[in-house]
Length: 456
Image 1 (cartoon, rainbow, N blue to C red):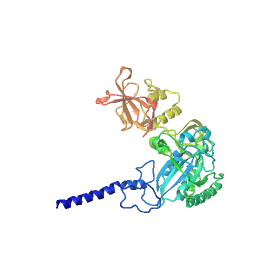
Image 2: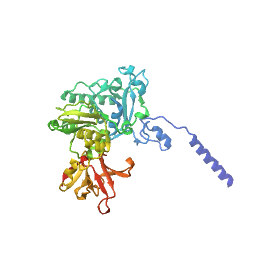
Image 3: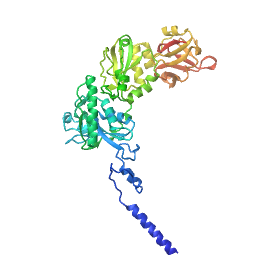
Image 4: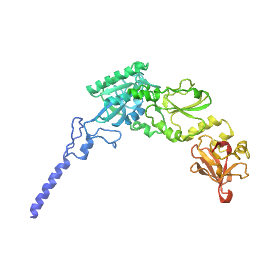
């Protein structure tokens, strides 16, 4: 009996050994419609397209397809394609060149700037054709850049920025030609020129360096280049899109205003600015959102091809502008200079100065009707008249701040132990809090010059 069991065990070991050393196929085929149930996990992984992000879900189906698109700088293009439902991955890379090394360092050499054999910056768009059509992707491609520009997109000039569609088969080529013809008709109706996009067969795609992959996600404080024409395929979208809206800039010709130039397409930096600054902003100088094509009648000096671009104007003329995302600290310091100028209020807000005792603003604010005192820049409520009291100190005094409106910071300067008070929204210096208020309560000693009053 023991001999029989021994023989069976040897047989099982032999079988397992055969499976363990069996060679694995690493060839990926787009024609197989099923995965053999005997394949190992490694076999299945080897069948997946190589991606810059291997954790992204890839459909195990022949519906997986790809196309390579060039539309200028690949950073913003990559992000736009990733936002299309049905797109599985978007990989930045190089293609359509010869006799030039496929690397960022080489294609950006001065000698290759106008080299027709230079590689183009492209994005390989991998998509599930059961969820999104190639036609839809190409429509988004054309809407996301200006295909009438030859070897450039805005200030990005050179053959590496050319508009190109690189197809894998005749069917893709035919779809590309059809969509291009449709868009040319729409461009003609909008008085644009001829499409310069080159449509050809893909020879080889070279994945770009890792630091280029998901670039906008890795660099959250930049800008998105927006060179789109504003011309849309969808007739309904063209009627409701931002580019087609009639904008009256007459109100911006008088007084001070802030303009935020945004993209009609998805721009993560625009969304971040809205989330971190604009959504909570209640200041007296209005923020106005515009596309670069909606600035008629205004005198703007800053170039407007980047989104967001924040511009401060007075009487219709630019005073200051910045391309790219503005952090709350940066925005409010710029706003402070724009609104307050070289004043005591600016000195208090940003250089931690202190109002003179019984200053003019103190005399105005010490006996107001019921209401709230707000941040002079952000408009956020800070202190309520219900909590105001006369400390006879010569500065506005309160027993508390509006809940969640201020930040307390230790301040040990000048040999004193104090607690500084700053506005949570704008970060400006407001004053200090001391433990000597009425009935054991705190005393918030606040500079009046950095406040505005809003009656209840």
